[in-house]
Image (cartoon, rainbow, N blue to C red; front, side):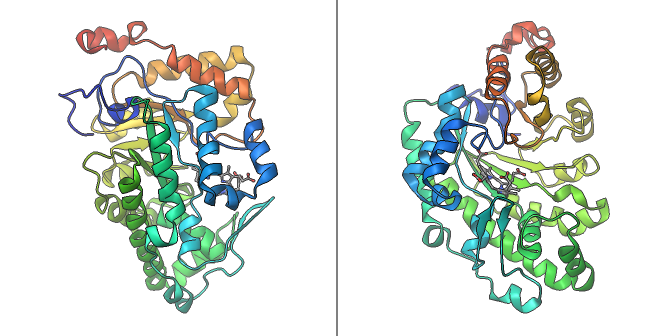
Length: 364
Ligand code: CP3
């Protein structure tokens, strides 16, 4: 976390929370906040394929803003997908009912050699145009942050080697065991691509960036230290992040939280299998925490859901905490429960909490 002594009230709430400043309430946004659970998204999908939505700037602006307009989230995350850079590296990509499909997966050293490290503006200019347009849309609202993102090398490699969603990651793990040198070369190429891609997003107006390592939790600590942590460090240390905080999300991270801290992000995004209290104890006070409501809690009755949000707010506090889910919003999530969660966070006041007793003067 950066300097906490000079609260910059001009900066968006999310940025201030990333910097560890004490606020009157935590900022709130939800991973995968735009998507199929919203009717307005489904209406757009009736007109465009998923990849068209990602690549058509006007459509992507509209979809990115849907949750912000519906629920007044404290952040807008650009509407895109983590698989856009692999496509720009030269891989064919389609989306079907079953999710992403890459019909010509990477299976050999020569497949890896054929991948290019794309110039992000030349090959994915639509992402930069989207960020530019979103910053213009948000020009009158200095409190709301614009988030850019990328997949981390490990998770991207899983899709590129498996050819899509996988259960056992057999192809990727076979490559990792049989030819670790080649696999490291793939991860390094991905890290170089992601550094350029995220720096271009920062240049285009992203105020916070999140690195998604959705499948980083599927391996032992030992494999994580060899194949995942070095690439988080490479990406994070390669970013032009003077004013732009970095959030690191790993799903299934209970056994690797300390290694997430070793990667030196500003924010550690905690999944719903580890409590915020345990995460805080294990990573210390230098990091802002983000999370970690169970996405399936949003299917519960409001009288069950609301106390879960209240409990999490007390646990997270108002210093160095961002309210979010432990993973993305699921399809079919009841919209009224998304609204309930966000309203509950936005109506929270640090006057109600233990933190105001500890830091009465800084409860602003
Ligand atoms: O957060 C947001 O609102 C921005 C949108 C966003 C999408 N994908 C849109 C999307 C973000 C941040 C992502 C990241 C992403 N994509 C991740 C990391 C986050 C996570 O959930 O772990 C991953 C693993 C992917 C890969 C991916 N894209 C999968 C596995 C799928 C199919 C499963 C699913 O959730 O649909 C997608 C498709 C996808 N990405 C959709 C959306 C809205 C659904 C596409 C549709 O409309 O049919």
